[in-house]
Image (cartoon, rainbow, N blue to C red; front, side):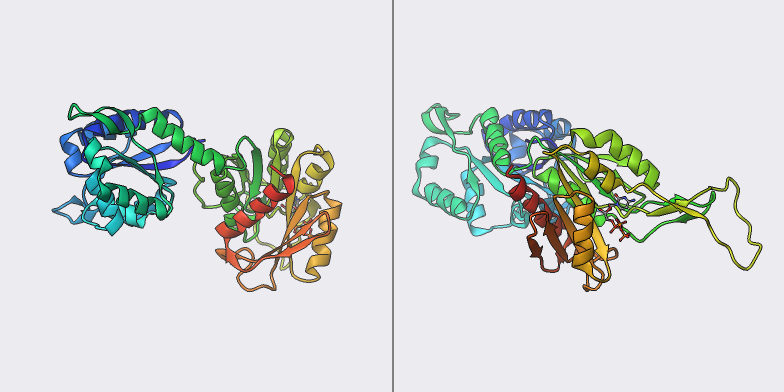
Length: 400
Ligand code: CTP
């Protein structure tokens, strides 16, 4: 559940700060990436060196990295990076600042910038925990959609016994695990995605290719991973970073795509073929650079294997297969023919008639044609949002 998850652990100034070491260790063991933010007060209880060593990342305390150069830590980027923001331990002071949005620390500025779910594990003495203001603050924090990991009862640093002890690290980690489990409909599912163009060589310096950027397929891979899937991404030549925790196999030609898909398709639950595969490839590839001679030059081409069609013919009944169709005219009719011919569960149609759709954009406008003859049209959206629409359709139809 936590494999590949990006977690910010925000540590505020309580004696329970030492328990951050166990939380980090457990999160890392489960495959999460952890970045730690500390308040200055927490550094009196545990050293940044301990937490940076365990988390394998520098600990962030202040806005500036280096006063002499003005280099600064970017709380906005960090907030957007995270899949979860965990405040543990959260002191009464930090809870109060979370309610009022008092951004006087790097921790608070990052909290206000984070778009991900926020988990708050309070720790304080029993009377502080029982105090009306603490109760009101926790109620407000919870009302805003954040999750409270309640403290446990036991002996406190003051020697008093009662409620206020930071939840045990394994219980905090279990809480996060349960959260992601419930929000990961593709958990335990294997998903194979093809993306990007293929390049068909003519000679050592030239090839036949297309304008596919691979963004749609890479967004699908990232979102499927976030929804819990074990993702294999078969990528043509593109300049995109591999999404976190996704297995990537690079290919260049249609032939390599075919060989790779054949080797991996059989144990997949869901197969999404978003690659823009060349339909033809040069019959022969010159081993030396072809020199210019005559005024005309014709290259003899032969058909490539239609990989999607092959997978459609060879897949098992329970495997879910999605194809793409990029059309310029008679869009729905052409896409429907491909849906039937290639034995797909649904086909995602992009029309080059639609502004903002297709290869060169960060946006896309799709229509999904299903094998039960239902057609669903979507608005123009970012490719990330389109990826979620496609995966949600699969989840709904596959009744996962
Ligand atoms: N596809 C494939 N192998 C090929 C060609 C296409 O796997 N050799 C897949 C693409 O990944 C896409 C779907 O087939 O999911 C449709 O691709 P598209 O190029 O739109 O259709 P074609 O079947 O090639 O038909 P045409 O080019 O004539 O429109």
